[in-house]
Length: 89
Image (tube, rainbow, N blue to C red; front, side, top):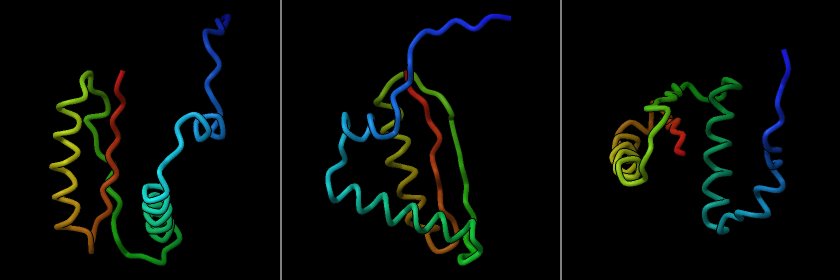
C-alpha cells in the first residue's frame, strides 16, 4: 500500500495566526472549553451531546440549524452541553 501526499494540513498555531478570533470570541471559547473540561474531570454533572448532521454542503442551512440549536442549548444549559459536529466543504 502506498500513500500519496496531497497537501500538508496547517498546524494549530498556523490556523490561529491566519484566522485570529476577536477577543470576545476567544474569551467565550475559553469559558466553554473550561465548562466542557469540568464534565470530563467530574467537577460537573452535566451531559455532553455531540450531534451532527456531521456534514453539509451549504452555509445557509447550517447557520439556520446552529441558530435553532443555540435556542435549545439555552433551555437545557443547566443539564446539557451541546457540541455541534458539522463539516462543510
